[in-house]
Amino acid sequence: MGKITGGKAAKSASKALRTSTSKAVKSAAASALTQSKAPNETTSAAAAKAASKVLRDGRTSKAAKSAAGSALTQARGKKSR
Image (cartoon, rainbow, N blue to C red; front, top):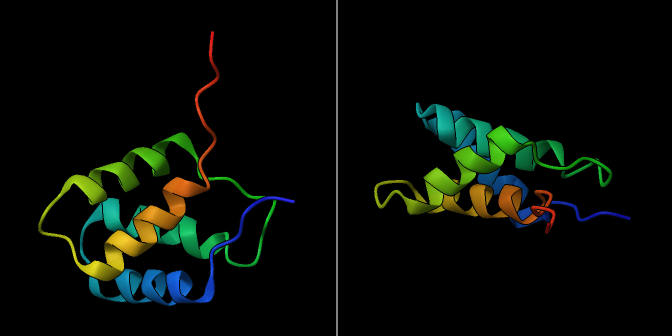
């Protein structure tokens, strides 16, 4: 069984989707919110890249960072060579 987005993170993701205009924030929040009910879903590479961008940006809200962190936690790791 995979990881799922917790209740607090899902609430933050919902808030970020409603309040943000940033595509990166919306992508990360949507990914986190999708995974709140679907444990078999994983964050896509594009959504993981967006989530990483959100976490590095000092101007994003706490809710956006929470959603991005949740989405990034559920991304597939890079395979070692």
